Amino acid sequence: MGALAGRPALVVGGGIGGLTAALALARRGAAVTVLERAPRLDEVGAGIQISPNAAHVLDALGLSGPFRAASVDSPAVTLRDHRGGLVLRMDLAAARPGQDFRTIHRARLIALLSDAARASGVTIRLDSPVEEPPDVPLLIGADGLHSRLRAALNGAETPFFTRQAAWRALIPLEPGAQPGAQVFMGAGRHLVSYPLAGGLRNIVAVEERGSWTVEGWSLPDDPANLRRAFAGFGGPVPGWLEQVTRCAVWGLHRHPVAPRWHDDRRAILGDAAHPTLPFLAQGACMAIEDGWTLAACLDADADQPRALARYQALRRGRCARIVDAASANARNYHLDGARRLAAHALLRMAGRLAPGAVFGRFAWVYDFDPVAAAP
Image (cartoon, rainbow, N blue to C red):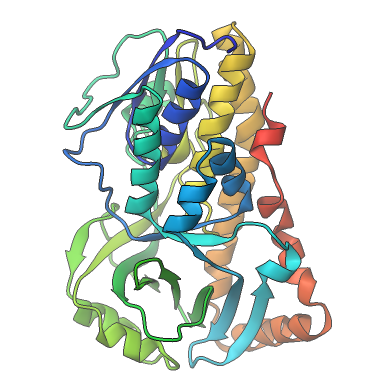
């Protein structure tokens, strides 16, 4: 036990980042309460990808076994053109043998974290919205895209609509399904799909559009709109989309990384601090990294303002770089005409001549160990 022993902490938000922080704080002796506005901890959303950088934290929290049991291996990312033709296969398992690249339903990860948090003494209060951040000695805002605590620390902001909208859907997994994530890239749109445990396939499909679309996770949409947007795609995509009976759509908005993550008694993490576009599969991973690092900094230094400053110093630069990389991927997936032909030709050549080079561009994301880097 270090500086957190017996210290009360209030976490606003019972999502992945908030529960990771709560569990990491409690394991270090803090008396933690989580306030979650939803009546149940079955967070909306579908599948997420967890890479080794976040898996290090889950392992340090003693969740490696349950996590692996609730998830499936994702040994590769395969890039295809919109017709289904192979562009590049990034072999994650070969690049980093023994490391965890896995996919899991968001709700199952929430359940793992909440069960472990409660077992560690965390009090989770559901159906508890926070209209005004309370005046407590240690307040952690894990309250997502529209964080009130972010606004309290940084003032109001207007996010930028990227003119992209995303659908998400789940369908039954076909027999003999290829493991790993597949990305189908077309002009002004792309589709990502991968298996989940429990016989499910996750689909996220992104389309550029001129009309504004609300930001959020749960706006229902007619599956016919999804099928119409990707009518020109080939390979397995038409068969997958025919099976979609329910889907949701949301607008993708770009937010700046918060300039200020803390004051003397308050701190923010995850989407409250650094919302990111879903084109590098690192949103949940960054929130997990944040939760661990925040707890470690607070436990290592009894001077809370200094500990919170250390937390921001350790996290902000990495998160900003990931946000920028995700934004760049959005452009690269949607190329058209001659630019798309040239880019795909280069990727095919790289896959033949230097298969590890593409992974190497993102090794800094996956090779980072937040447990070793924390104080």
